[in-house]
Length: 276
Image 1 (cartoon, helix red, strand yellow):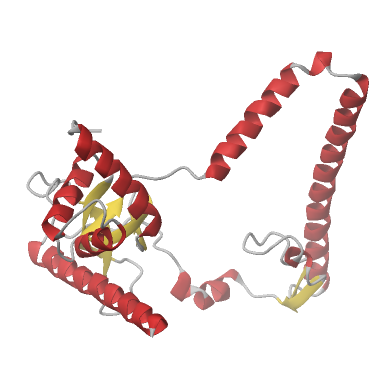
Image 2 (cartoon, rainbow, N blue to C red):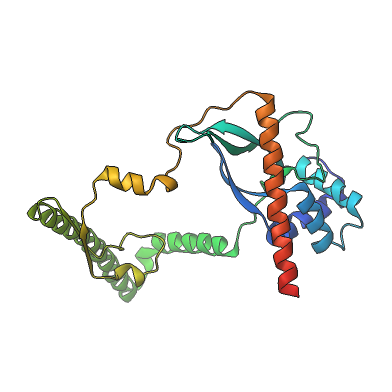
């Protein structure tokens, strides 16, 4: 953390914790960085006044502390750019992307406007500390296993064999599913696709939902037809090249600022409707 006065350091730390939990954001993707929580400078100041009124007095003071959040790398400034989309097959061949704005003139400059910023500061949840504590306790228990009583060692042995058996059962089930799929596929003249427990590997479902239905029999679809059906969901396969024209970048930032403004207004209208 950059050198700050003791009073400013305490306020910035409190603001970071409070706003990180309470301020709504939008999830965007930065190339080579991943998903980040994005918000506008105006939203940051508005939420600072709303949730941190005991720490900031007015909008100017909020902008000052927002500048300090930038200075200590709690947040970073971004900018939207227009890039070529190689998979686009219409006139809209450009796509907006967010990237870090490291230009020296604006890198640590905060603006109370529709300028995109994103969180760098993150709070470690309690569940993570509990998991780490459990891993440490398990490691200590494993090291001290020679001094365990006999019943504890025998119980651990049974649990270990049970885990190995469960893993073997799952691997065997996958082999059975694949074998049945290949048998039905070839016996049907490559026209049918059969899966036992078709949703077993779906990560978005719960434990019990993954085991239903029992089987699924449908017409086989060649990979090309599947790609055509999923064309709208297909991600960019290669990294797009960035246009160097200043007019395109300026247009992209203006459109992105308008999009951020529309999202903020939509959320504000929703909150007013709920309160009414």
